[in-house]
Every structure is written in structure tokens, then in C-alpha cells.
Length: 124
Image (cartoon, rainbow, N blue to C red; front, side):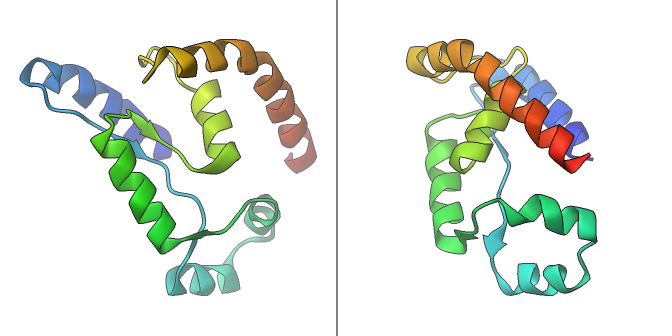
């Protein structure tokens, strides 16, 4: 379902660009809320293992970064190093928000792919 949302967001971005309407896909991390606390009680072991190594963000930080990313016109709004790595690895044909971001993605992609390979091997 997450990839379907990504495809929808990319299609909407292309469709709405002539009208100068921006589309941002926000990929929030684990956020410190009562909902996450309830989810953690029933979370499958596999999902819990994946979540253990990730940072927990405050709701305020997620809200602030979401609004900042949308105002900046970011197509993908990610959080933390994990979010940056995933966005870099899965950017597809989306344009970069800046030359620096495009250059970083170009040069860091092999390193991030190697880290992703290790992460997959550990969790698979």
C-alpha cells in the first residue's frame, strides 16, 4: 500500500504540475504518540525487530518537518538518516530539490545500497 501511495503521488505531481500544484509524499517515522504505544503492544516480532534500531521522533518534530518539506516543495519528505537513505535509494525519476541533493544522492547511492543490503540480510 505504501508503494501505491508513492505511485499515486508521483502521478499526481506530473498531472498537476501545469497548474503549479505541488504534491508531497510524507513518510513519517515512528512518532512518540499514544497510538504508537498501543501499536507496540500488539506489534509482530518481525516488525518490532525492524523498529528497534530506528529513532523515535516527537509529534512536534514530525509536524514541523512535514510543513517545512511541503513549503519547500519537496516531493518526498523523509525523516532522519534512515529517511534520507530510503529517499536516495528510491528516488526514481523524481527531480532533486537542489543540485547538492542530487550530487549527494549520486555519490552516496552505492554506499546506501550496501547498507541496505546488510540491513536486508540481517532482517530477512
